[in-house]
Length: 216
Ligand code: ADP
Ligand code: AMP
Image (cartoon, rainbow, N blue to C red):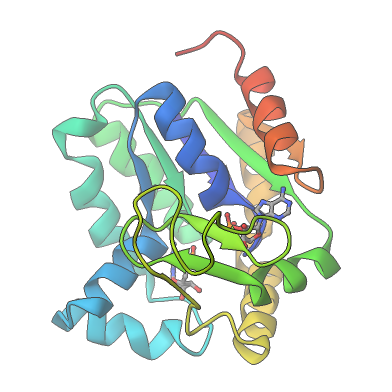
């Protein structure tokens, strides 16, 4: 199954993607995670991306499309994939369509996780991320069992540099201007399904599974 998880920053894409990847045995492809890995390794691409990411701006389309192209061509995407955080612009969506045609793949669903704007700020400023596996926690809504330690892999949790209030506000504005128009784009393509992301994590997951039905 070929999926896009779509939503504003903090909507819960990464949280749901982790569960979906386990359940459907398909890779979770997060452009944000890929950039953060490159930044941690100080690769030239990581250094370039950091200039944008730390301020809350989007990384230029050519860089982003390039890494997705390489990743989707991997053999582990044969049975499907979950894209998280890509596409984020109309140009990226159009490029993805061409890329999928080249790879002889078809998009099955774009799952929009819809969350109220005020909840997003609270979610992002209280987020804690795993340094190793990228699992996402929240100081109130989803605390780890042991403070500061990932339940999934036992690694240390950290606060993302771009989860400060100033960057969060820029990211939410960028979402409204550049990314939200994709809702209409995918509605017109007939592959958009929407779930209420204001509910608790388990209920959101159950709703997504319900929308996907028996399709594997
Ligand atoms: P995204 O990948 O869309 O930016 P995350 O999955 O990282 O979002 O979630 C953002 C924050 O909100 C995290 O701290 C996460 O633990 C928390 N969160 C995710 N889903 C929910 C939910 N349904 N209710 C409350 N908090 C949530
Ligand atoms: P995320 O982990 O999805 O919240 O992404 C973190 C940051 O990485 C974003 O704020 C952007 O700066 C950058 N980024 C991730 N995905 C994309 C994308 N598809 N296009 C441009 N920038 C991106």
